[in-house]
Amino acid sequence: MHSSQSATPWRAAALAVCLATSACADLDSDDDGPAPELELDLALTIDNLDVRHGSLRIEATMLEGSADVSMWLGPACEAQEVGRGIATPAGFSWSLSVDDVGRAIPCGLVVKAHGMTEEGLRVVKTASIDVSVSLVPDGAEVVRLYTQETTGEETTLAFATPGRATRLHVGGSVIGAEVEEEETMTAEGLSVSTFAVSNADLARSVLHRSHVSVLGEHFLATVAVGPLTLDVAEPAVETVPSAPASAPVAEEGESYGDG
Image (tube, rainbow, N blue to C red; front, side, top):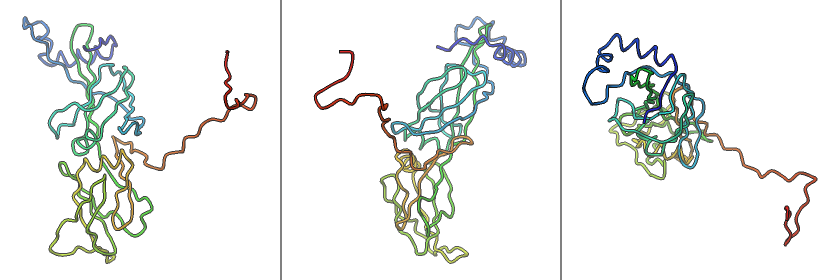
């Protein structure tokens, strides 16, 4: 069910669109079917990206949003709902699986917040979010990323290397270099080796924090959602807080408590 929205901005914006279209007439029709939703822009800000339990978690703030939120692949792909999470009118926390992230790389994401005005007019606010993948060196000194291009379900990665590279390790897969009739060279005299990598493998590398490796040199894949890029730096080591100095320490076979 769509959550009821009594906020004045929902009502004012919806009525403005309603009066300029035929949606108002649809409310007065005798048709038993649901009236079409009016589409309005949703203002949101991506606040944080992190990885939890093997999924990409997106936290965002919405301006005059709704607790009835869904996330979809962008218009470049077939309409498909992705991920799951929780929402309030002020924001949401959403988790995407490896497959969801892989599909979102070429398509982007669309957030939909559904609501209803006091007059019973159904409204959906939408926001489109770009998604992209990139590589950052993780100790790589000799090999460098030369070019990168995402097309459909694959991203083509070209590396500049001292000698021709034939294999790329990414997301648990070993990928052979593209066959080229003539070797491509950079202005510095480095060989260019090209690999077609599935976005699913790149997404797996991001969420599992596994290396993308070529000629023994390592990179980390990361993903950007809107203007925010996932930090793939080495996570801080979790430590167990020490007991207060005044707390007694139990000997083996003893326990402390009310009993």
